[in-house]
Image (cartoon, rainbow, N blue to C red; front, side, top):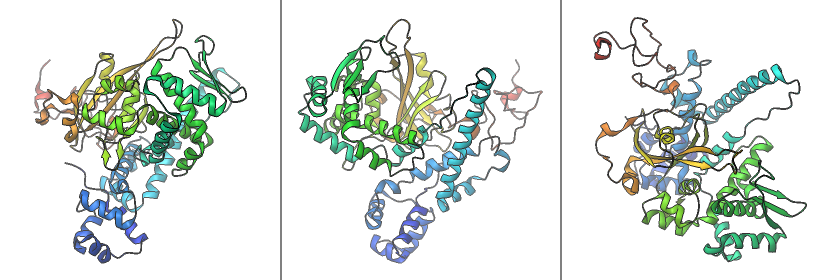
Length: 484
């Protein structure tokens, strides 16, 4: 079953903040006060039309009423209380929902505290390693990536001010799609007095782009493919021309450290570079016309597979919205280095992703698109694609690395994707049962379970070997009676 909507509490808080009674808001919405009461208590969902009316009357962005932010907070809290430290005091599902709905600030505070705890645990391990072999401990910086991910998620990974900046830049720089590199280098030279040079790969193995502000020289490594060179040039222009815009956007989300703010500027410069290399209108039309064929779009706009995947998650302009995608990037060890949940799917924040996701299986067939219908524990189905991408090393002594990109949408959008052709989308048995992470997954019969779920009592029978160490099938079931 799908989870109940999580928008009612927010509607009520916004209504009270505007000084409106239930009867007044109901009258303006042309619905009964009793129906609005049901909505505010999450007994009825907001229809699309009603959500637009509520957003207009309460003067808020419609995206704030989608319920996705609350759903993500609830998923994060379930993962937090899946920790062994908190397992004994784990609240029930209704209690967690009430916390998210009635005390959202407290829920976010718990997330921050647990994030700090997770970081401190890593610091302790790092300190132990350093103490064992290196007396020069140095300082240990907190990782700011989660704060920046929250910034992107809060904006739905859509920044209209950056889209407009990219549009103006195309006009001012007189960009030519067939000579992008020359145009961007010319802008840096003419507007900023910056010389762009190609740096030999062996000269600086640690940097693919290095800007020397004193010498006014931008060095781009020779190991980069053309698409990445263009992207890095546009990225540098964003850092030079839009720093005030980036800082203004950053104020919309709590960034607690200088490192977080710097990483936010990098993420927003990447967004600008994507908007320059793949302008919204032509990219949106090409994506729809070609049914979101990533590889075709990669060739059409002379970018990379990963850049196209990122750009597809930003198609949220009112009146020109694309399919809402989620995005995840992992390495071969399963570490998540990028996550964005535009589709509403739950992605683990504090642990690795479910091993049943096809993003892991992509490493078995490098360079090939893999498809999957995934069903989460709440019954929601998603259509997902995954493929590996190469990060060139630059030489024999610098081996390349491989990452896997996963992208997907709710199953109801699957027919809009070319990758769904020939896939049976109608029969539920075709869906692969997946979860968020083992500690918060209800599926006891999973053969790939690595840890016991925190919300089930651990019942291990040493005389019965189930499909995992954490599941002993009851006597009389086929699994229990099967002879080996």
